[in-house]
Length: 494
Image (cartoon, rainbow, N blue to C red; front, side):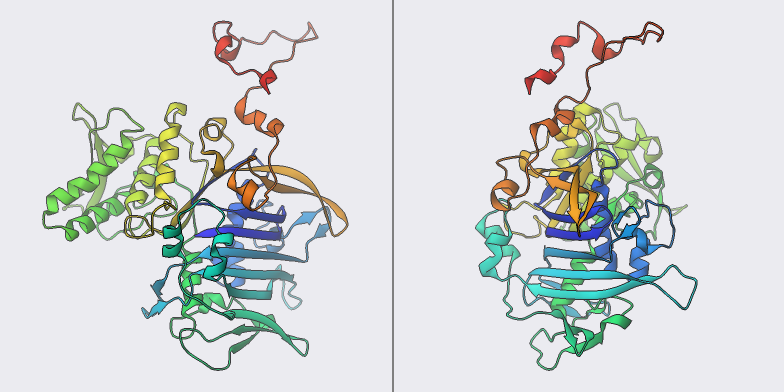
């Protein structure tokens, strides 16, 4: 679970500090930079698993300069930032396994990970250069400091179930020895001895990305947590396809393997109980009940198993019994189905980022989508357990229909700002919250003005009167109808 993220020098995130709860919605106009926050989370996740250069190239390049990692650094005119830095506070799983299947147990589950990267030009080749690791740190946040560092509303029982263990020294640190920069991996898990020293300038990847259970169990579990940070980009075409029997049983980032994942969850539930058929129908029934909040005419959801072709196909049926395969379902229905399946997956943990979840959803059904997204996330009022997995949902939107119906303390507004960076005026993105919410009170995050909220409360601006008779008369819009005027909000109210 990502509880706080500080970023400097990444794209237009010049100096950003955002605290997260179990469910967070980032609202902002197109192009303001709210998606860059997702890109920063994706980069950190990739750096926990891949080399520096591969991780950098996995993040979208809005400048379309394929292969140029400099596009990740903040740019203002001809000036490019010399470095970009990240600091992430997170709650990690208490136990896990490494790449060789060896079990690991964290010394402490509340951690702070810091990373600074610089651009390094490759003088010996034609490549566009790479990245150099300037700083890497993994430190503990002890139980005594947990309450201060978990500002979102939660119970003591939840906090005690999430934050466990104690540590008095770093797991990874960066030090200088006679001008030589060293990344030190300190012993963990009851082991003692000298830390492993790595020459920072020659490292092709982060020290965290090679952590193992034997030497660095806590760093390994921080790595596993960061690897679980996913950006969902649900593609209806991927969700419509049937799955082979051998398909992965985890939903892909594009929504692929929807049928295989639901079939697997049904089988998993059946193994836990004596009545297999009842358990399978229970899982399908839960998905159907959730989908009925989006579509009135839903009676049944199931997976058809074609043994001859070895294919799994998702079907739904209405009250009249007519069956519809996934191929016939609307884009919005498929996205909602995918999220309903994710909610039931006990293996799903970490951070789920989702862009514009309202796409394809009728405005009247947006509350059902928001309810589902919040139900996917951990409930900070209840101790973490099998029925309350440690997972988090972060979405972004520019839709007034979404913003108007959000819980007020889940809203973060992205807006353009003019800042001074190293003596230079720069345009960047800033993040604000509503006055009186926990981000305002506990972490003193800047608050958004009522004027900035007008676009969400009154999304359609009034039409200015035409001054030139030479312009053709515009057709009357729906909102211009006199009989609808009493139902429209007024700008003068604020």
